[in-house]
Length: 452
Image 1: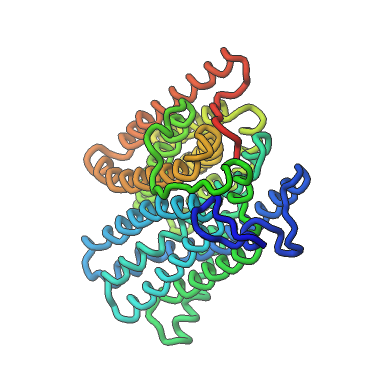
Image 2 (image 1 turned 60 degrees about the vertical axis):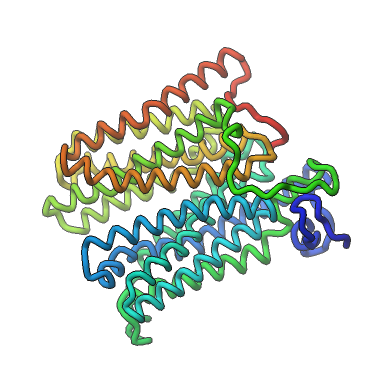
């Protein structure tokens, strides 16, 4: 089998990344082969999301508690969250560059391997009672979260425009299982701590380590041929080299729908993180039992991922900009519900959290698909990484500023600020819907180059 350098500029084994490992025959010579490969790719990514999602949720669920134990000072605890968020944002750009050069398999495996190293460092930090070593571990740990985010884009590499929304949303939905299962493994992790005579909470990171390494194995064995490299076949002349870049140029977002998706994803994540954290704090101080607080949070998680396939089908059926309008209106409704609910666990606050998750899910699914379809094939990977980087940074900004707003002006003021924040995205989405109706094409996405 000849060595292929046309996509990456470096020797790669064609059988590893472009052919069916079962028989070594080239796939994708016809629509049937491409469809078969797409179905297998989506199944693999969904299973990987489930396993790796357990690891991500297991570690992040106790990170703040372990940081508090190691820091010895409440003022230092916030540094762990800030450092891990900044590490995730940097990893988003780096993993996008790896995918751009070498394909999805290497990027996803790299993300989970770095996350596994981070889990080991966190265990070492717990054993040595070192807070700063734990901060380093969480910086690395965030790479696994980013790999999970980029898996949704991988689901769309071989999809057609008619079913890309369903593919992306299904992979996002699969993460629900991990998000629910991970925090419920705390009891088993505590038993591991006692059996191995390890510090409390460190066993959670051993579980995460197993989850990440399992995900690496699944991707290495089953994600073949590489969906991204396979989708690029025939798009570049043989021998053409890809210039290494880590960020897409600003001109990449010149298309109106590229700007719309970037603004919608960033602002939606910012307000979701802000309100999620402050709402939980708001209602937990009401004297209600933690069982009721946990119930409200479970509804929020259900809204975030449980209904993503519905939004994927909706985006495929009525168009991306129109579905974005639906998601942003759901978010605005959640702000109104939360802002007018009493400072206690009530059906109003529970409903508000549920709607907040629904709005984020709708925008996440639709914005991800729209971004992929609105930029050139040459810059698609880097645009996706840039979008995730900006989204994660906005989340960090939201978590940092929300406490200040609530402390000085009260919780209702935060909901008003959230509404003002998402208005630009809503106006852009409405403008895109009007433009698509005037043009009569039924869709506002400006697709340049072949969809991948």
